[in-house]
Length: 131
Image (tube, rainbow, N blue to C red; front, side, top):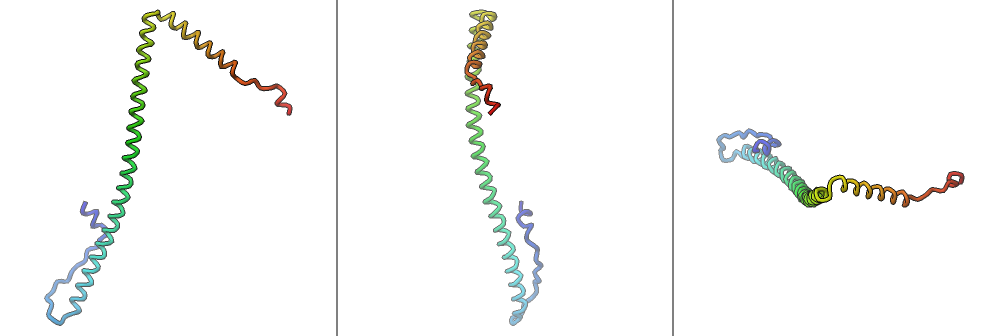
């Protein structure tokens, strides 16, 4: 983790030497090096702060997505539960009336639905193609 933080920072060798009073050029050089290191640290901090904010935004979007998925999962589970109850009821009806009678009734209802669909279809005029 620390290596990722320090990646953008180049190491600076500090020339530690004995300073004599009046040797201002050495102090100026040392201060310039310190300023350079602090500047690179600040730039690394700004970059990391930006990455952190982007990651926080991504995390928030993922959490919202997960919440929506969780809600949808709960809806599907409830629908599945209802369908299982319907299936159990259908099995009970077959047991009470007998499988042949129930299958005949279901088949008759399907045929009635197909006939109803056929009547509801709009009829196309034969002379439309000649216009």
